[in-house]
Image (cartoon, rainbow, N blue to C red; front, side, top):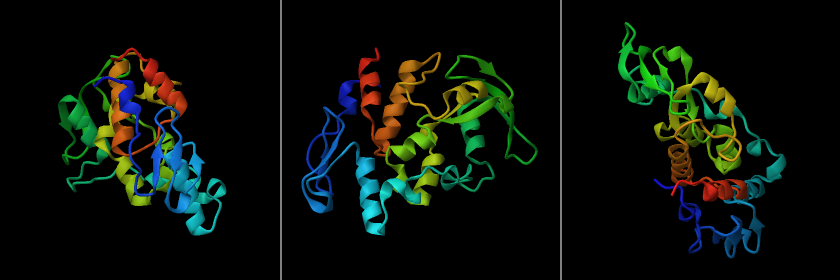
Length: 217
């Protein structure tokens, strides 16, 4: 998938709130409904403002808008097979993977690190990275989600990669404009765009400028 400027545009008709994204600036303009006449830096900001209005609190200072990692939960066993999301990702993205005696925990295998190009055989050397970090998702619109949706996002395999622990710690919660992998840059950007679009998360101007400038066409 090419990280083209067209992938970042979200213009068009009004949504169910009577608003739309201005593709040139990334701003969220409202022409009907409860936010009529207001302009926000993103759809997520409009959502937070609306949630704050409905709850009788000021969204920017409310607990709802503050990032809390615990609200996104731990790795879950979504299909009840005793393998949590971490082990499911290791199984899906590795080769010659072996499980422990109970058939639940991944104990060995072979993985190619998508951020460094290194080869790993001990799963303890790997972290499961959220391509779009949870904190980044939170400030891009997820702050207004119910906790169940936050937990679903945190366990979404489309947003998860088994990567070298050091690379994951280096990345932290930073986006592409602040951090990029050593290898597979265009694949990484394409995944970033796909996840943000799938979950209807906003992109700020810095993201848009960086991705537009990337040589990934």
